[in-house]
Image 1: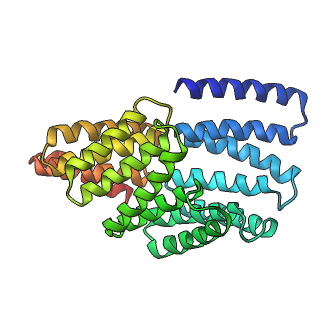
Image 2: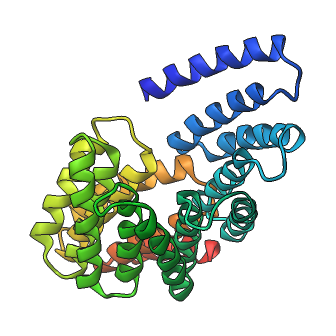
Image 3: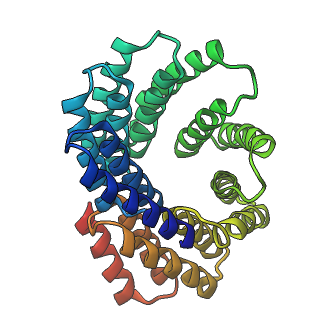
Length: 311
C-alpha cells in the first residue's frame, strides 16, 4: 500500500500544477486524472477510480477526435471499473463503445481489438454467458495468433480467461491445461513475485480443489498468498485466494481453519465492494454452507438471507 500512496502523492502534485498552469480541457490534465484513476483501480477503490476516469474522459471527449485511441482506452477503463463493481450491463455498454472506436481507427488484426474481445469475455464469464465468452475469446485468440509469436505475453490473459470459462463449465482438465499454459508464459516473462503469477497460482489451486486434490490446491494457494501478502497487489485478488483456501478447508471438514480464511476474505470484500456486489453473495453463500455443516443454523440462515438479498 505504501507504493500506491507514493504514486498518488506524485500524481496529485502533478495534477495541481497542471490545474493551475493549463486550460481545463487540456489533454495533459486528462492524463493526470487518468493516472490517479488507475492507481485507485489497482487499489480496488472503484468509486474513486470511476470518478477520476470520468473526469479524464470528459476532457478527451472535448479535446480529441472521436476515433482517437485514448478515447477507446478511456471507455475500456470505465467499463473495467463497472465490471469490477459487478455492474456488468454498464461494463458491456462501455466495452461496446471502446470496440466501435477501435474498429474505425485500427486495422483488423491490431492487438487492441483482441483486448476488447478479452474484456467482453471476462464480462460474459462473470454473467454466466459462457457461449458468448468463448466466442469473444476465439475472436481475441484469432487476432493474437496473426499478430504475435507463440509464447508472447498477450496469450497469457487469453489462456487465463479460457481457464476460467472451462472451470465454470466444470471441464476441469481443460481449465487446468489453459491455466498451466498461462503460468508457463508468466514464469518466463515476469519476476517470481509478480501479482499475475499469484492470480494464476490461485486459479490452478482452485481447479485442483474442484478435482478433489486438496493437497495440491493448498500448495498452489500457499504460493499465491506468499506473493499477495508480501507485495503490492489488488487486495481483492488476495480476498479471492483467502476464499479459495477457505473453500478447500471447508471441503476437508476443517471448519475452524476455513472460517479463519473466509473471515479474512470477507473483511476485504466488505471494505472494498458495494453492499450488493455479486462477489459478496458468493462468500455469504459459502459461509452459510460452513455454518450449516457445523450445525450453527441461525448463523447459516443469517448468511443465506444476506446472499439472497443481493440476488
